Length: 145
Image (tube, rainbow, N blue to C red):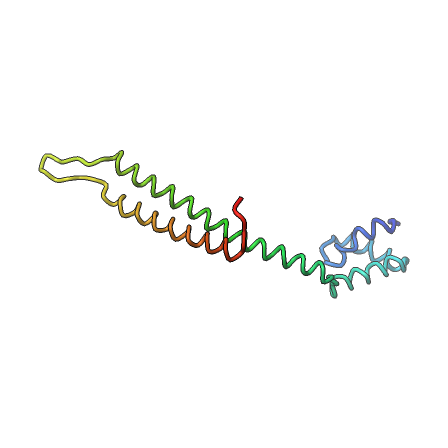
């Protein structure tokens, strides 16, 4: 079966990676035995994969994108932790007041006291996240939108 050079060129990356079927490999090898142009394409493919050429402009662009992504990730994490900790603190204090305290017949006071220190711990996390957020904003000179 004679395949066109365009079909073979589409299959060459699969052939090079050795992920195509045995039938496809044999068809490609038959074609390569007869077609020097496709052999050249395979050699170019090998050169591109073995010795990739990346321009300095592309390299700087990728480094800039990577640095911005890391900065944005840190800032987003601190903003998210601020939001979650503030919300958790508010929920703790509201739950404490909604549940309320009651006195049992034997005179024992029953209240969800543990919610108070937990709420304060969340407030502490909120304050630490707020400080970290301002430090990161100044460090990376990010404008608040």
